[in-house]
Image (cartoon, rainbow, N blue to C red; front, side, top):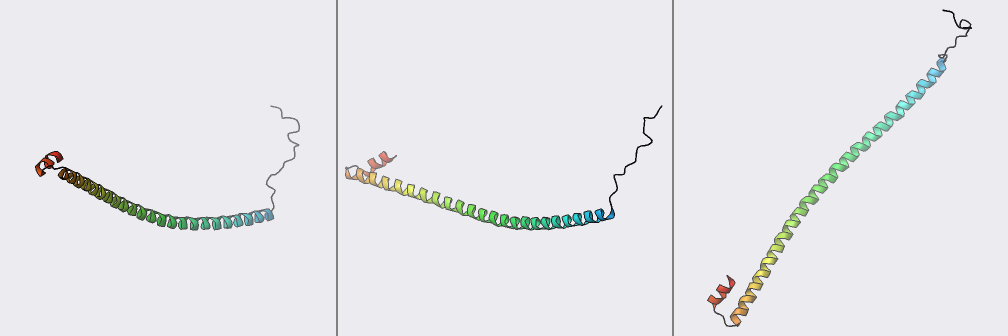
Length: 114
């Protein structure tokens, strides 16, 4: 096969013509980049640990508040129930008093209450 015209005469170019000083500057750049990244990672890890501690404290406070809330709700329910019983008792007493005042006997009142 014939060669293309000028294929032997083409000058060879090298793309790896970087001097030693370029390598040294690149190494120092990368070292400084690594140092800054390491510092940033360390500070982020500290922040994460602080946030974990804060989260733990907040969860404990939330659990305590929920526990207190459930106790208060139970007390409120008991107080409401007691008040309702007192109201029923007072109403029953007033009904019995009215019936006695109207001249009914105790046996008749018991029959009405059933």
